Length: 538
Picture 1 (cartoon, rainbow, N blue to C red):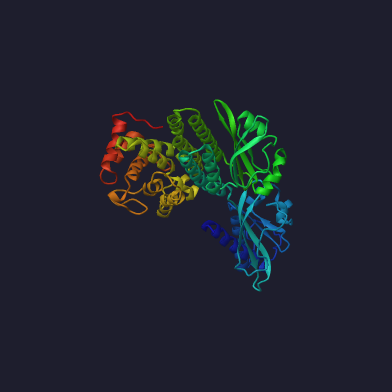
Picture 2: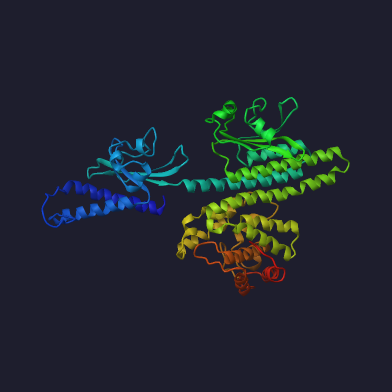
């Protein structure tokens, strides 16, 4: 339970006590003439209770979370301003009504602890049909005889937080799936093996319930080329899928198969196989549409925007792979041409990762928009300038795109805070390299991307974090990433309290720390790129 919600509950508990004792001791004062005393009560004890009641009612009203109190019959006896606004009804229309008829609208009460001891607090999560998610906290208030009086309920919207968590999970799975697919496709010895590898990776690494690749035959039927997970029953002939994906070359997304009448013909398959949403990607090239790539996901509304972008790139990679095998089979010089066709696969992988990383970056920290692309481009340029082979330097580009992925675990408020951060807040932010490492460590990249991400805030003198590594203990790639990240952050700023210094000032700052915090050769390479070769990043 977060600290601020706990404090809210503590405040409401005090309010409960004040209201309870007030109801027992207070008597309604008679009307009198003369100036109005805000607390016209001669009895000092009662006067204090009246004042406490007003103070706590004010506190109840200004809470950011929606809060209300209800009786044994779940009827609302008090609601704060936030709850009234969220319900969209005047207070008079709310009081006395069962709260689950008002907000959140459910067919039953939220799990609570009516009648349990006073110390019991119930916590649950509510997902509404609108897509909103709320953290629900409620606790009962009892009298001195432990008899139930009413419950106080606090609802905090966590939709954005849950969507971000979902994006992080999806990002991890997308990167793992894309990297696995690209690698296995490059190693495959036949078209069938390549397509089967793509389907298997989609299910096992991407978390989909079913993956299928097929093509349309001349008679209008569809032929399965590869599949993994649950098998589709019969041929894919559903209206809205074949005509659009196989004829027009447009991606088709069905986010709620069990409810959308347009896809009623798919419900039997969806129920049998356990998928609630699906996407179909055409496999199209300059010579036409050769087939479709079908994916089914367990939950409805599963296909988020950045995920679709990655899957479209994967479908394009399948087209390249299919073309490469057919060239090999049709020509004597097919092997060399096949290599030429497969060379873009790594670029597709980086494009896919860039798509998910950029989308995630904006959700995590809007002030850092473009930071990942700039750091990736600069790290790649520095890597090449220091003499790294291009194949190895591509790993730097990938690490640059992913180095801040762990920031998804940090509260958004810290990135938006305009005042200087406290030590506790700085410590929270400094956890992101380890969080990023945990996300990436099980993904089988051809480069030590996870380790680069873990070490990109380490410094030569041991003053960095998270492990305080020194000099040769730090990967050379991580040292390059550190300089690229520092230059970009100083030049462009990443938070409201970080001014944009510009490239010249940023270069001076890293130059001052050359040999102390940053590797001399790496800093010299960066300085040469900007000052002598005219490198520019935007």
